Amino acid sequence: MTIQPLDFEQPLIDLEKCLSELTSNSPSDDKKTEDIRKQLELMRTDLYKNLTAWQRIQIARHPARPYALDYIEECFTDFIELHGDRLFGDDQAMPAGLAKIGNHHCVVLMQQKGRSVKENIKRTFGSPHPEGYRKALRLMRMAEKFSLPVIAFIDTPGAYPGIGAEERHIAEAIAVNLREMMLLKTPILSIIIGEGGSGGALGIGVADRVLMMENSYYSVISPEGCAAILWKHRNHRAEAADALKLTAADLSEFELIDSVIPEPMGGAHRDPKAVMATMSQTILSTLEEITKIPMDKLLHQRYAKFRKMGVFSAYTTSNK
Image (cartoon, rainbow, N blue to C red):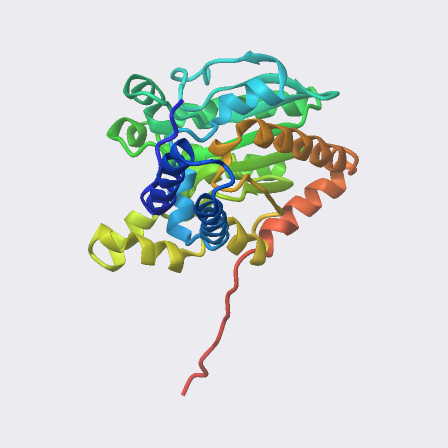
């Protein structure tokens, strides 16, 4: 796949093009060529080490970025997809099934986007319907029954906002998942690999360990939605992204996630093989950790983890 550069990467692309033209017409040890090569390296390092929140969101949404099924194909073996919620139908935006990673048999849940118009329509752009969350819950209960850990890959702009989803009670489906995941008697690992939008992400995000890839985001609302509400225009999305504190670094600092998975310079789509190796190692080490914790203690830690999130204050006024 040809990697389409993002807007903020254009100066790098222009300099790379200039370097390519020089090297095709000049010796490789030409001083001017070497100077441009050094300038390019410095520019690349400076750009990617100082990304804004909005630039990271653009990387998280890059169409060449690895999606959930890519990780299943490269990091897992023996994947068997299971279908349907046994109530309404099967949601293609939420593939799920049984798989194996290392010595661990597990249940995997995913939010999957498409790379073409046809596939995006099939996957509803990675926005699950109520039946997707109910399918996920059905498989989580099966995981509990057979003592299998649950691994969830989160990558959604949000739950599907259509009339049909409302008619089939999308809010109730997500709420039930939040409650049941808090009580599920099996280890749970959730990983935000791209977009982590609102309740759509939370619906499979209650876990013993919540990890985020370096160039992903996790937020109560999209920057565009926030900008439309507060600034009355989507053009303020970059300001909204900064204000929302939705990057992996921000959420790690607030202790809302457990760790950040590093990515190659420029994003996961720049070196998918390296990303897959890192992801496999991270999942295995995390599973080794949480599967050794006694279940009563794990449930207590899971509850305490989410109970302490947020800051609030209370005050009373005396009657006069």
